[in-house]
Image (cartoon, rainbow, N blue to C red; front, side, top):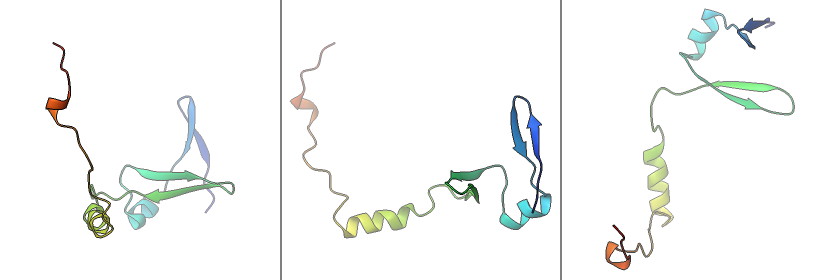
Length: 80
């Protein structure tokens, strides 16, 4: 699909057809990746922290969720 680059203030941009935005579920943000061959735009999920539960389970399975030797507050000399 050929689209025109238009002036938007001091910048330039492109307009996406409504049907494209609806098809991809794009609301107000996209993820932009710049490569040697061009620009890749991907829809951003509206679900905050999507995938975190699975990632935490994987970390636990690999014993990567252990905090070692956290100093207590009594180990510090506080200045007021």
